[in-house]
Length: 339
Ligand code: DAH
Image (cartoon, rainbow, N blue to C red):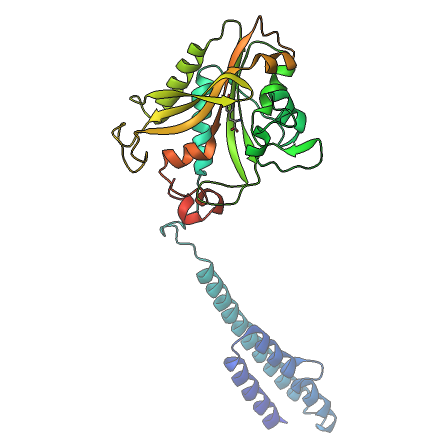
């Protein structure tokens, strides 16, 4: 009995030493002290021990049990300390390491150009308004003095939703919507998306942006239009920028003009940028046609006004010297992050 006990003790103590994890240590505990463990099994042999030796054997068994329990406890503490140590090591935060850089997005060149244009006109007392992209034929054409059979309808290849509804081909309908509200005077710009059934190439897209401008008050003249757009051009392209008004035709203005600015690259001498002419076309404008005023409920005898329409992409391409409009729509990060 004594030998068996010794053997159990030595084996179990050795196994305790060798256990590398808390799970394995627990296995050893069950093996030694569990209900079906080695010591319990051994005690079943007590029957065969001489009754007068039993207390002594019992004492020996208790001693071995105590020894094993002590060894288990100290090994358990060692293993737990090791686990804690490993966890602390893995959770360490080195506050001196450089921080991971967050990727910050960039504003789109269109957005930068629009904000610039808005800043200039808001500075002159204009309001920024919006109109719907899906528009009534009436606002997009009819009320702008472009009746059903007017050739100007062909120039603006229109996406028709049905007979009466179109995707607006210009921001000019916002002029009509603003005038109809009946609040005068008007000093507004209306930026927004427009649509034309065009093939995609370096200068065309089926969807692009315009900024409409409209001023209505008593005694507004062409001189006001010229002064306003000259100031706009100087603020947008630089102090020395000159403007040139070329006679043109738009159904909703009379007289109408296209406006060129002196090339801000070569100062007007002629270069690759302005195709040798020294001038760059930037917008269309004119005095609001009396018929457009009266269709919107404004008396052309009492009020007059001017309007203009700028292509936003055109401004962005010029200002940032981008030579292909498609770059503005691809949203390639390598392109966008340059602005
Ligand atoms: N709506 C015209 C277009 O898309 C641009 C335009 C020209 C707007 C003259 C105006 C204007 O307000 O007066 O081609």
